[in-house]
Image (cartoon, rainbow, N blue to C red; front, side, top):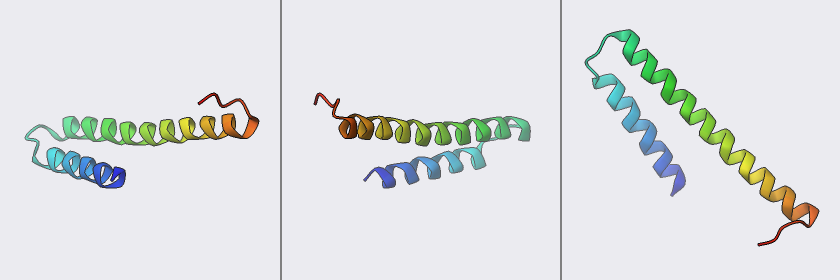
Length: 63
C-alpha cells in the first residue's frame, strides 16, 4: 500500500510539473525540490527503521 501511494505521489508530481505553464527555470526548481523531498523521505524512513532495530537488538526497546 505504501508503494502504491509513493508511486502515485511521484506520478502526480510529474504530471504537475509537465503541465505547469511557467518558465523552464521555475519547473526545474520545483523538480529539484521534489527530488530532494523524495530522497530525504527515504533516508528518514531508513534511519528510523535502523534506530528501532538497534533498540530491539540492544535490548533497550520499551514498547
